[in-house]
Image 1 (spheres, chains in turn purple, cyan):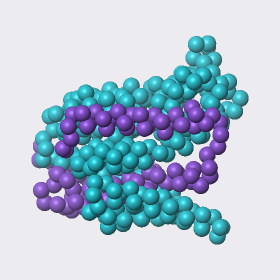
Image 2: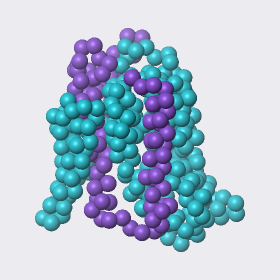
Image 3: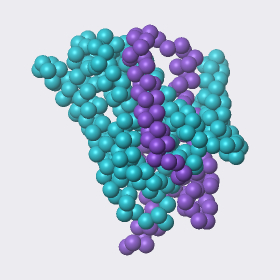
Length: 110
Length: 234
């Protein structure tokens, strides 16, 4: 990470303001008016549109790994996605992914 | 607070208890990863207290690790939060009549869990009085928010002790993918995720996060198009 302290605080402050503006928007300024349907439709897809694209490079080119992507990275990814999809619960996916990824660390400690 | 409001507040607290299982590890993780990434304790806590939006906090952190331009960090992280405009629109008919200051607090505490539980409750009990609705919302959100901040702090304290070769940063993609996978409810959602992944990888060489924005925008349009087409067919 390569930011000055001022820049980091600026990022936090602007994210706080921006996030509040988004959350308050309809509650505060527009009252009980409805949103334009097409926009509402697009907004429903934002998490699914942003997050997979954001993590795909991290999975294929992990930042902190000395050997690039390994079988362990892929297995943990598969476990997280598969479990979360089948159980429809975020927490089980996370635990499955973490369990696979940190299994070697845990075994080394034992 | 009158007794009906007190009981609405208490119902909110009880209803949100199962969600704590999810908030605690996620908050702890944010604390750990933020410290490992190089943020100070004060910065890590400020993130959780001021922004209180897990996915976008992780997103910002990830892009900071990539040294993305500040404008792109804000654009991508706030894009992750755009769904909350929808929450705001859904809550407005139920809570829009509350005083401005209360609505401002509701806005600040309007996140996934509080929105999901509150809207379900209001639809289930349409004749709930306004003050009870507000009390219920605060019962839910004021239980979760302090835990989010507390466990960020605990995570930050733990993070100092974790060795770098454990690759803690890989927890980020795992957490995000676990969040997204249950959302893949329809072919439109799957198509959206697919376009997002393919374009993000193809455009990964574009400077400081701009590839992701293009990918996300195309993916959203894909989602709406596929959904519209499938509806016409049906």
